[in-house]
Image (cartoon, each protein chain N blue to C red):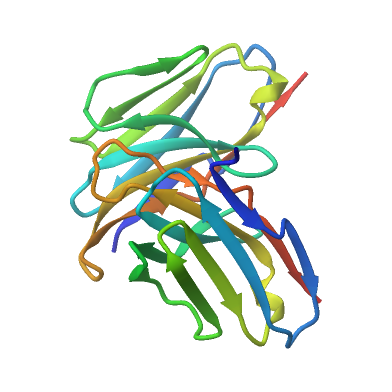
Length: 115
Length: 114
């Protein structure tokens, strides 16, 4: 069965710390891996990764994918209180039962950054 | 201007009632989804429609019936609401058969069944 596992489930850090969030997956016919940030409402898109070893970067956030070992990490440097959120990992894979692609989400990592 | 909009934002109702949630997207996407997010924040797909055709139907009770009148709209009707239906329901859309296209989410409908 396809699955996406995120770790840790929750994390509390202080402002200025660096955090690394993990996402491992077992998905049929992988197509892409996406990271989302969810604060109070809708998940907002951070990164899409399709190729191994190519780092995507946006400000203090960066992410990389390892398609051989089937995982991705999301790094946040110099954390701020505004980074407090749930970070969701989703993997797009082929669903044999429905004959189409679908996104499978992990359980999320709840990050709290203390001032 | 909202890309994926769903209504209502909040829904509080009694057990046994029937309710609907509406979703519309103006992104020109061909595929729309309903996701349920439980109290532990786990997002699980319920249904997906591609060009008005049901393509994903996960293990969801028959009390949940999606309807897609056109590819820009996907509504969710729930019959005989139960306490366990309380959750946040997210609508989303994407372009299914195009690579490197991400999923766009609506702002969610928080359903509370009393």
